[in-house]
Amino acid sequence: MTPTRFGAVGVSKFHRLKASGRPAWGFFVGGNLMIFYCPNCWNELLDGQQLCVRCHQEVSSWDEKTFEAKLLQSLSHPEPMTQMRAVYLLGERKATQAVGALAELFRRTSNPFLKSEVVEAVAKIGGDSAFSLLIEALQDPSFIVRGEVVNALTKFPERGAVEGALERALKDPSFYVRETAKQTLEGLRSMSE
Ligand SMILES: [Zn+2]
Image (cartoon, rainbow, N blue to C red; front, side, top):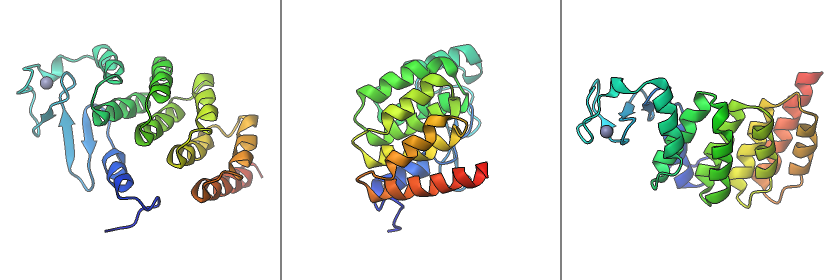
């Protein structure tokens, strides 16, 4: 078994799955294997399939606007993997109007992987509300989430509050978070020199 940077098996599985996702409805899962999902029911589609065998929707019938609404709806899906896909895609699409819903999801879930995915997504989207959520998330009970926040803060180098937040993270109870904060701070400082 390969050790991961968190030393946990569950985490490595998660990273493999979310790692290099692609826009639209496809996801890379390791190597070059790509999985496509029906945007209506999230059933897995076979390669090149244009009609979903489960819900009989034509994949091409989904326009961008419907798709984004569907993604927002999927944030309340009972399956965490479906929620994660939706979060990921909203981040990739830089869906500014999704930040509020993403923040709500962050607050109501206790799943640290889902929370981390939200952190990453809002960091991609950017803006004031996204930034406030990151500062809030720095107090999360899970070190996985706090570590993700520290990484995500590098997307906001122009904010004065970032340095202070990272300095506080240097005193985090988790070694992983402290180390990540240290490296991130060094990186930020060398950038501004
Ligand atoms: Zn379907």
